[in-house]
Amino acid sequence: MTTENTNNEIKSTENNSGWNFSWPKPYPDTEATAILKAEPEHFQVDEIPLLHPQGEGEHVYIYIRKKNVNTHWVAKLIAKAFGVKEMDVSYAGMKDRHAVTTQWFSVYAPKSELVLAERPFEDEDVEVLQQVRHSKKLRRGDLLGNRFKILLTDLQGDKAAIEANLNQIKAQGVANYFGAQRFGHDGGNMDKALSMLTGERRERNKQKRSIYLSAARSYIFNEVLAARITQGLWGKSIAGDIDVEGQSVDKAELATAPMWGRGKLTSAEQTLALETQVAETQPELCDGLEHAGLNQERRQLVSTVEGLRWDWHDQQQLELTFSLAAGQYATSVLEAFVTVTEPDRLVD
Image (cartoon, rainbow, N blue to C red; front, side):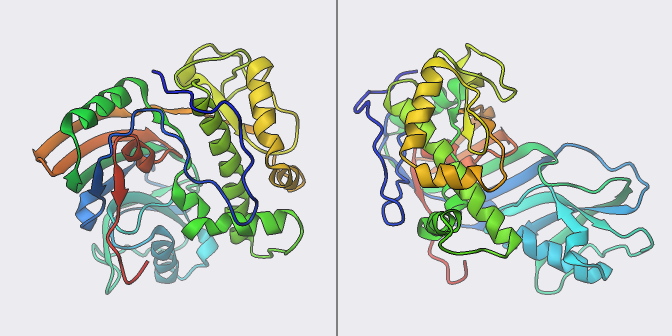
């Protein structure tokens, strides 16, 4: 697994007006293009749960299939149906709106006997597949991962080049970048994150504050990963690499980069030097995150793509199925072999 070393220096980005979102890819550019989500059915996501409800307890677990509806809105509808506050409804992770997705919700309703109808919400394409009780609340991150079935349409490009990259992805994974959605429309979350972290503005909304903190941490992680790819280190373990638990490793698929926060970097030697150099290009983000009460954490540099299969329906339609661990992005898989665009929509 190699990449051309075109520039060994880590360049600083311009704060506020020049955020860099064009991170390098680990595999050759196929120059292929395609349409993603031409129809909701072309992007299907099934949650792989961490736990299964046991049939009794104070929490009602609801397994839902939804189409063209976002997760937060479904949670609001469930809260209204049960007559509880929105904070009493939870889910393991957000799912795409312009897609067909399945996921679990839980609602704290110890005394409620309500059983939702199969199609409980008028004017919304939401189907209840299962409803059962459990003793514990479903919390964010309580999932093993997600299973994807994606159909790319209007695919333009060299089939042999696409196949070559797909075979590398199957064998060696993809760069575990955070996806564009983490940074907001036109990267706007980064401007807000910077102004919040430097004290130029206060953010009293806890949900928005969390979004901006996540964007800032994700940006630094992506910059470290980009630096390793640029320096020809993709697929290689270097001196000082550690895993998510902070243990020394010599396998590329276990190596990590920092999710920035307070405390010293736990990497060493060459890895520590590289991460420190990247951090020095974003001193305001790093300093702000350290004072925001977040602790240093680690995230794997490589996203392993489980069970990757593909099938050409014709020369311009390619169907893919694969699974990813929680917190990893299907867009990172797609971007490793094709540039995708989504249809213009009147409603985002």
